[in-house]
Length: 187
Image (cartoon, rainbow, N blue to C red; front, side, top):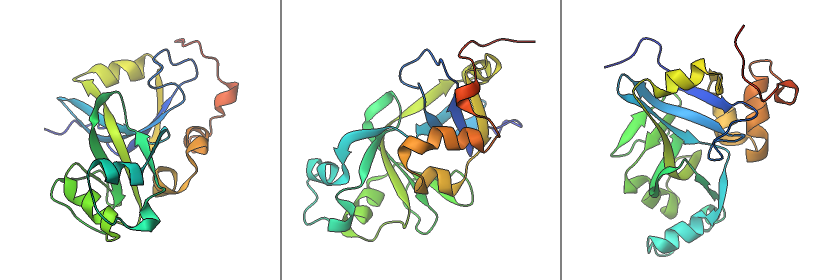
């Protein structure tokens, strides 16, 4: 059941001073948000793991050399053993969820196999784990000024260097994070 104030296809920008180290200085793409809660993928935390290492762990033979050096991201603290792939809509896979008309989230192995064979989507991010919120939890965090939100763009999600995504997402709102106090307050 869809919530009228859905945050799907929004980028959550962690406010300066975010107490949870899992989300300090992060940008999280909300992929699904409804009455049962929300699921997102952190898009600016590369791990010390490349796709080549992931392909090796999955015992994929003769992977496409162009994909080997692509970073794998820490998608969030929940289910770090599970893989998630954010990708453009140039290809559809078994378990794909449309985040927007331009971005999909796929949880099935077929997209990893396609990436390894060089037949994957043009733009993609592979993440281990996800960010999850129970019903009402994300809304409460928004009210507590833990996050800013802005509409997701393909450029921020796929094209921008990871280190620039946090500031760039805030700048899309006209906010300079370096000028914000880490103390939350209400007028």
